[in-house]
Length: 290
Length: 290
Image: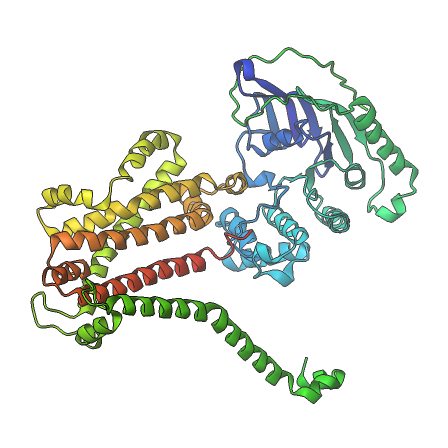
């Protein structure tokens, strides 16, 4: 029995003539403690999958089952780290974590326990030195750390990362990836991460889920990353399995699913209406399961 | 770093003076530069205007008194702002305070109702469609046009003046608040959804702080408008207040009194604007810069 089950998810934005089918038949089961990466070209609907699991979007058909129960509304059991950190700029680093902790553990923890818990999570991402800083006073990498601390502090069943390091420079990104590896080893979270960075996907994941191009994107291939943990990026650079995995993903992205930019992009509005007639399929599905 | 260390590592600096004295000299220089760049230009222009005015007003047959004559004639009012000879014969400070009191009532009411309506219009598309056209038409009605109808309604000058202030200053508050609410980034809403803030928590912890910069620009425009409106309204309703004072002075041909009152009106209006701006800066610390 899988821990998290994404089941036959279709997603159509708009309706009638302007209907735009973004996802078709997305099926994925995730084991407890597994680290899954979703990779694909931009615009293929990776974020839509994540938003559906998070409950921020409602799937047109199909749905998500977490620990045997269907989820269709957002909640702290599926904490999201958003791409642009989304810290509240008027709150300090400490308060940004506190707003979540105060709400979620209002009845289950005392004030002192909550305080310790906030400090513990900020310590885990090495942000204890900047508790009273405002987001505008810290760097992009630090903001993302606080975002991660806030998500971890919710004690989520599934931690979801939406291109968490996409806006960071390469050095900061590598540093944060190492931190995520360390935290993951410590906590054993179930993680669903969206990325378009091949190295990041291989380095961090147990399985890499590759999405086909839209419209009507779906899972094209799933790759097991059979590398022992803890992983070290320097040692892995010459590892055969590591390079084979990279090779597989690259060939999927740049040969099988080469991105051809359409001339006129269909406008995708986040206003989904259920039961809209789907547009006829123009693209054959490659439902390979590696 | 202690002073001894500084001197030890920087012997050159020690020769020219202690770091503290240097910093003090630097501070004094900055202050002087600030005065030269920010205080000197307006003083120069004011001096120039006074000279031109003096020259024009001193010509034979001039309709308006020169500044020297204004000061001479109003000296009693300037040095005794708080005299009270009963009835309408009170010092100019009392007149200003009476006007400020009306503004305080009308403006506070406008803030309360304006922010509430702004939140409603910002939150609900239906309310926007229904109310926005009405707001757009009513906000163009000049302040004084409201006076006869409010006199008819309230049958008394005092509440009418307050109503005119209210109805004049409420529009920018409503409109800016609703724009602020509409511009709350989707990310903040998502954060609120993930941690499951309820309506009241969302309102106080996300919505108000996120919209605060917009709300305060509305409040600032509003306080300026309410000061504009009170002067005009008081000229018509009479009794007490700086507007009445100006009208009374005109009726008894005390032109110098009018000029003095105008200076006070300008200064008070400026101060009101700065007070609201200052509160806004304090409240929205960090929000505007992200």
